[in-house]
Image 1 (cartoon, rainbow, N blue to C red):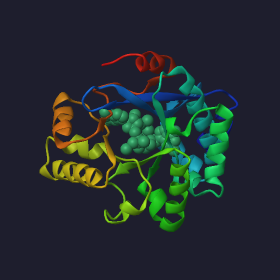
Image 2 (image 1 turned 135 degrees about the vertical axis):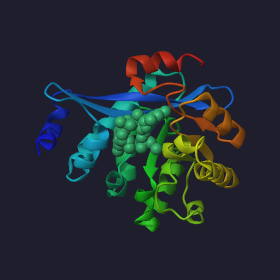
Image 3 (image 1 turned 180 degrees about the vertical axis):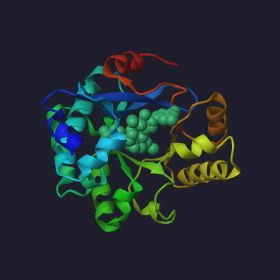
Image 4 (image 1 turned 90 degrees about the horizontal axis):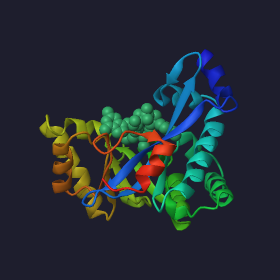
Length: 249
Ligand code: G
Ligand code: G
Ligand code: MN
Ligand code: NA
């Protein structure tokens, strides 16, 4: 309860920020985009993880104000990067809101950015509960030029057969599978299957949570198109991301 009360004032108190984590191309290691990740730091409790406060916000209408704040700040950051896209996480609750597309488009127009530089990350949960509506929404977003990424792929309930119905640009392999790759044959098999599936469907495949050079190498060999993880960079403050955006690894 206390956290909820604090969260409702977090925006006004200027306690939120966004961290940005590079997404790199498999071969050149050029940074093609950054994932925006929200951070909340309070004077009383220090840093509170989004894994805690996002679910709380989702229990009330707070998720909408929080989501709007995140999107507006992520879009404003684009002007400081030479050409990369920003990848923004959306809660299933935001995604299922009526007029979601119009709402996002309004923010993008206000910020004066091209939809091509905005990647919308949604989870399988967001699209499989009401597949019909989700397919329609994704189709509209894609027509407007947005990129669509299916986040945490492999952890949800999507039937592999059904994902071809959705207008997607890429799959993001959940980091639990990358983590298990070197130890368990099962994880390695799942990673390979997702990469094959993505390629067969003409989608990009972003491997998340890449922490070691041997994981990166195995993923390159397997054919992942993009890599993301601590090996390249942790999520960093905006000022640092601006510097990274100008560099190569
Ligand atoms: O960045 P970190 O690993 O602490 O994030 C923990 C969880 O919070 C992850 O599941 C991540 O997807 C989620 N999360 C982080 N930032 C955002 C955000 O801006 N919006 C939403 N909806 N979820 C986020
Ligand atoms: O659920 P989602 O994929 O949006 O969450 C991404 C989360 O994963 C972020 O909170 C980010 O801090 C975390 N993350 C990013 N790279 C790594 C990594 O290499 N290792 C680990 N353990 N976590 C990572
Ligand atoms: Mn994500
Ligand atoms: Na993920």
